[in-house]
Amino acid sequence: MSDPISADATASEIARAVADGTVKAVAVVEAALARIAASEPTVNAFTDIVAARARKRAAEVDAGGTKGPLAGVPFAVKNLFDIAGIATRAGSKINNDNPPAARDGALIRRLEEAGAILVGGLNMGEYAYDFTGENAHYGPSRNPHDPTRMTGGSSGGSGAAVASGEVPLALGSDTNGSIRVPSALCGLFGLKPTYGRLSRAGSFPFVDAFDHLGPLARSAEDLALAFDAMQGPDPDDPVCTTRAAIPTLPLLHEGVGALRIAMAGDYFLQGAEPQALAVVEIAAHALSAATQPVILPDAAAARAAAYVITAIEGAALHLPRLKSRPQDFDPDTRERFMAGALLPGSWYVKAQRFRRRYREAVLKLFDDVDVILAPATPCSAPKLGQKMMTIDGVELAVRANLGMYTQPISFIGLPVAVAPMQHPGPMPLGVQIIAKPFNEQAVLRVAHWLQKQGIANAERGKL
Amino acid sequence: MAEEKPDIGKLVDEAAKAIGLAIAPAYRDNVILNYQRSLAIAAPLLAVNLDDELTPAPVYRP
Image 1 (spheres, rainbow over the protein chains, first blue to last red):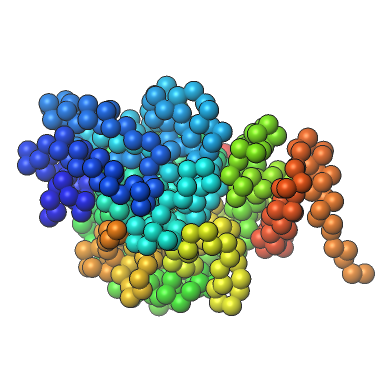
Image 2 (cartoon, helix red, strand yellow):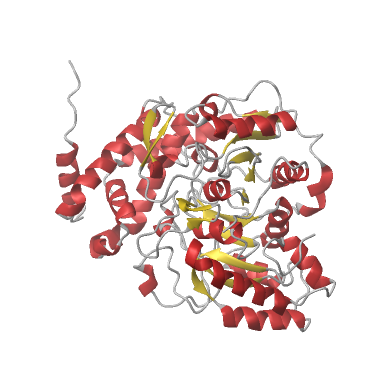
C-alpha cells in the first residue's frame, strides 16, 4: 500500500484512504499539483491546469459533499474533452480560438459525480491524428521513462501524466490506438472499451466511426473503478449504447481459469521487433493460452480499411479549416489531412463494406475463445523527432505504423485492455488483451491477473 | 499491356482544384508523399473482392 499522497499511490488506494479518513482530499490534490509543477518542465503533459477548481472541489469532498467510489482521486483529461470555462483545444492552435466550453464533457461529469477531482487538460497530437505524442504548437509530451523518447499518441499527455506519477488516472481517446499506443510506450494499463460503451458527448471528434474514450492508469483495478463510474446510456451521444452498465470491479478478482485464451497469429506475429512479440509470448505462456494461435482473417486489409476511413472522415471534418487556416495546422497533420481530402470516395465505401464482413468473421472466433492476445506496438518508444524506423529490415514511417496492431481491433469496436509487460529491455512494451463486444470484464480480469502475478507492472518513470 | 503509373502530382493538383482546396507550394510535395503512402497502405483493402450483396451496415453495432 502506497502513501496516498505519494506519486506511487493508485486511484484505488487514494479513494480508500479518503473514504476511511486516513487522508484529506485537499492534501491529495495539493500533492498532485506540486508534482505537476515539478514534473512539467520534463514531461510537458499538461496544457491547462485548473488548480482553483480542483482545490474547491477537494474541499467539498472533505466536507462530505461527495462519497463516491473515486472520492478524492485527482485525474486529468486529454484536451479534446470539454472543460467548462476553457476552449477545447483538441491539440490544435485553431480550436484554441473557440469560445470556452459551457460545461464539462460527459465522462468528466461522471467521474466527478463519483468523487474524482479534475486537475487539468492534457497535451495531445493535433486533432488526434497521431501515434507519436508530438505537437508543433504545444511541444511534445515526453516519455517519463526516457524524456528523449516519444510517449506515443495521440493521448501522449495522458500517458506522460500517469507514467510520471503526476496523477494516478487520466482519460484519453482512441480512434486507431491512441489510448493503447501511449499505454504501451509509457508502461501503463489502458482500456479502450467497446465502441459505444462510454459516452463521447462533450469531446471533440476525429472519426465518428471509430472514436472511443477510455482511461489510462497504473493498475487494472483503477481502470475498472473508473470504467464502472463512467458506464451508462447518454442520449447526448447517438452512438452510446442503451445497454445497462455491466460493472467490472466485482468480478476483477475472479481469476482467469475459466477463460479460453489464445494469441493472435499471422498478421500479429509479423513486422515487429522481437521483444514486442516476446512479451505477448510471455503473457500467453503465463495464461496457459491455446497452443494454436487464432487467425483474424484479412487483418492487413482491416488495417488498410481503418486507415482509409480515418483519412477520409478526418479530412472531411477538417476541410473547412484546411481551406481557411492551413498555415495554423501542425505541419505533421496538415499534409496528411490534405491528402485524405483527395482520396477516392469509392475506397471509403469499400472500406465500410469490408468492415461488415471482417466484423462477422472476427466475431465468429469468439465462439471458441474468450480472449485474444496481440502486440500493442511493433517496437518500444522511438526517439522524439524520429520519422522513420526499420523493423525486420523494412523501413517504415513512424507516424503511420506505430498503430499497425491496434487499428484492426478498434476498426470493429472490440474492447481491449493494454497491460505493460515486465521484460528485460529499458523501455516499456505492452500486450493487447482483446474480447468480444461488451466483455470488458474479461479483458480487465486478465490484465489484473497479469499484474497480480508480477508479469505485468506499471512502474513509474524515474525522472 | 503494362499498367500506366498514375501521375500523383497531377492528380493532387487537379483534385484539390476540384474541391476548392488551395495547396501552397511549400505543402505540395508532402501532400503528394502522403497520397503515395495512402496508395501503398490501402493496397490490401483494394485487393479484396467483395460480393455485391455485401452492404455496409446501415446502423453499425459493435
